Length: 173
Image (cartoon, rainbow, N blue to C red):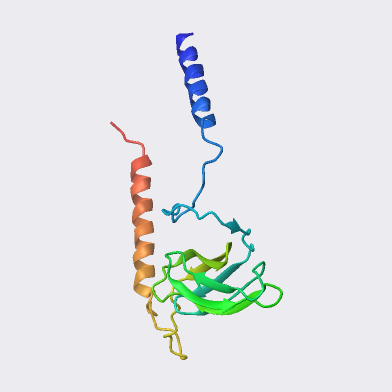
């Protein structure tokens, strides 16, 4: 009875610990939460699209909701400025920015800032591509002479069967 009571108490304590999390906790994913406090600005929701590229490649960034004619500044998630452009008469912008050459593989964020509006674009940086394979045949990585290996395998099977037969044979005293 006492053991059941301990188990129930442990389950209740575990459930209470699970439920004690804060509702405002922020899940910042693999790269962690930003260390700088957020600015008091109007922030638009992420566009939901993810750009993909490799370090050093140019990607096109498109957005809207800027004041007409305002300057849009693009920054990488480490604060590096990637470039600027000007919003058109409708507050829309479109330009190409280059992923930094030292960008590590994984998800990063490009922030487009125009006045007090910030927009976030996720960029999935892939590992470097390798294109050093000859156009000819694939390299030979195995052996074309498998006869000895087949013979060794067959001998191991026969030897194993003989040991098994010997182990199961009745012994006479």
